[in-house]
Length: 466
Image (cartoon, rainbow, N blue to C red; front, top):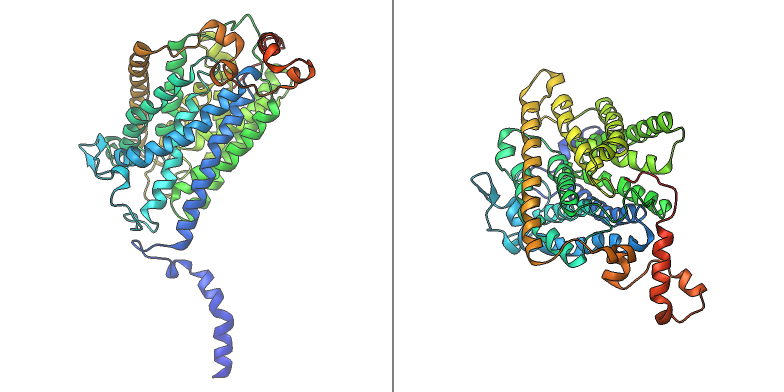
């Protein structure tokens, strides 16, 4: 008997590890592991928005770096407040005819420590996780109009865009709206985040017009190490973005994480290789651009595709986004400053369609099979949903622009652009070493040094920017 007890003590831990599902929390019961993973993922997604600020900030001229970073940082604060008060209710409130959530959850009314329906995490953890998605989505748009929008107009536009465009679209896809009922799949935001922000960014940059001097004055990135730091933070945070969307510490999260890494790596390689072949040299900006392109492309498919299709999706996404940045923008003549559309709009479009090709219930039984697994319904749903996202982003952005411009000018004037928005909008400069070395009092030399710095900013070797 004593010997049997010793054997059980030795073997029981291994039996538990071998059959974890037997000890997992039942749906409707809070699971500490799942909850911890979702909260950690929320923190990972949070760091992406400041990371985006660095990513974009390094690619603008040094007279606009602070305003570029400020836009991302301020969005974190403003949209968090909007989400808690209104956004969550509009997105995940009781569905109203497939178009919007009811306001029964305004101010997070009635949401305490109760378990998320059909889940193992408290709804408040889900609120926190989705808040970070709502935060980063409008921040992506800022890359399209960088260096030419007044800050007060930016604040108004972003707030209205979040309420009137992001919240409804998120409900249509994730909150039980009509696109979800159609059968569209978007694991972590290809439709809701990347297409919506990229297309809105393209629309707005066309409405605003080109930056002063574009095509005549080289506008090179002022600090590529800053951009690479931002790209690294984005890649890091994206694991929470995609794997966190499994809403649990489980096999699906692991699969989504591997798909994310594979696609990002493949796109980095494909972008650098095609750039190397066509231009003769591989660049660090190309590598940073490629990894973001791959991350965008895999986002809608991360929880629905196997590892090899994820690599294929990333590799194709890297090539498509490279040509969008290097060729398409120049041919069509729009000034998408940091290529929000070329990366997020087109990358998200490819990812959404690719989901309809490679999705398989072998990875996610709750999903659907794509074209390459013998079914066509999902691909049709993905195409329709993509067209809806394009139309909604274009029409909504035009209407918001017209309304805001009727009361105030969104576009900075010529003198403000030449001086730089850091000074004209915020009264600050990122780099004051020139002022210090001049040996003159700050007040007396500020304007002259500013004008000189602005001229220096515009001299350099022309290079593509993301």
